[in-house]
Length: 299
Image (cartoon, rainbow, N blue to C red; front, side, top):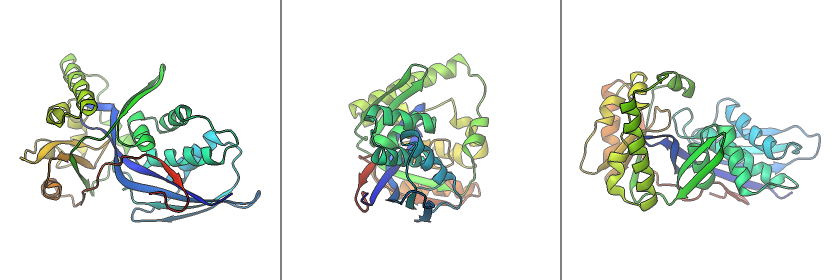
């Protein structure tokens, strides 16, 4: 089989109020260059890129995706080039599962259709917002449960992005453990109102409502206890700033702005610095495409 490459974008989930249901794809990519080996040959994996994995966690995600679609897959040689910051709430595992499912579809004898592939990514990842943003690109509103997977994909909003990744370490499991077991009716209604508004804003392209729609009472205030500087960042106001939110479970922060994203990112980095954390500021665009498959480098 001809060598091929598969890439998937980073993603930012929740966007404040859209807890476990809203995500956007970010043009920072993970790419796997794949060669099918002869039967019986040992698999070969190499890691490169600015955020090259230091252990096999990402490989395990990709291999799980392959096995889901092509359980009798031949051995592979995979060069994995990763630019998505790991452990930062930017969807590296979702990108890995999406890549694995796409590789499985490429080498399977009878690959399932897109709906089944998308569901496989969402079920493997466990978070449909990250998963489908990585799979489809753009902005996604999704639900996953006993009633199956339901989603809508929109063009990304007409805003600019700043992504700020602090040196703070916070695993997804630890971030989940910070959340309460129950919420007041007032906080639940607060988020339901704003999550509905967030979906409507993304669907309509009305960026004027995004700032109000991103406000949250279900997760960010609790995770702020483990992310020094986040409380001040969530209160940041600036003429160019539309809205700011924790990216996924964090500790990275995503800001929507009309312009001056580097300056906005610098202000957020300054608040992290005030709390004792260094940080990396990036100003990528939205990823309008999700998974890309082709020869060489599809990105």
